[in-house]
Image (cartoon, rainbow, N blue to C red; front, side):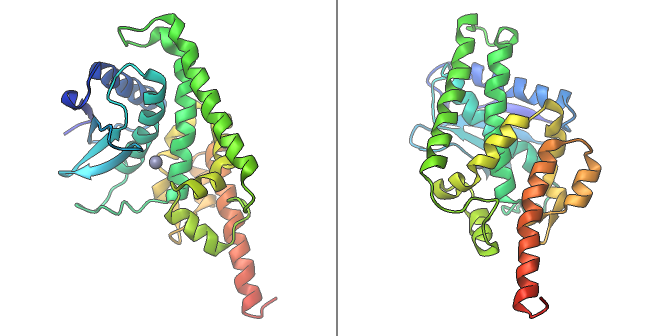
Length: 264
Ligand SMILES: [Zn+2]
């Protein structure tokens, strides 16, 4: 087995080949920037009954489900596809037990990276649309990628403004556990939104190499082993940002434990 993308053509009403091209272009971009080619097949299908896209293990293989079955809504499909593909690369690069459906990941890291990646690739396609192999492409479409990014960005900003709770930088350890468990739920997403937008802002192509390997740097089930992680990917500001968040919360919990145990 080696890496390949298989699109379930019959699940799309129109242009499934565009989805395949886009998935392969994103993958090629990641490989060019140091992400290792996984020994795994990525199946992509559409299901209009679903409200949200997702990635699952079906018959021992990875299956991405998109919510739109017409292959030419390139901007919104890219947004979904880039997110789920990043899950795929983070999970398939991780050596796991066979049939293990608990992939041993950290939801708060993974969701933040996947969401930021959607923004990164919208921007990438806005700037490189003329180079895309999608056959029906026309240069006039490029701005629709930026428009969609602006829309999604504004949605995040609105949610951040209307949210009055504590965000990931300041949550307690208990809240952090909840946040990690339900990282893709709407409320928890708002808690991570500012960090996610920051990550999207600072993202560089070569940062992905370090980001997809985060599973090798999990510490105590909830945190990142920042010292080792940063040392292995010097200059990777995305890794540094995630480690900073992790350290802040870990430090606070250490401080609290010392306080509770009467050491302070
Ligand atoms: Zn996700």
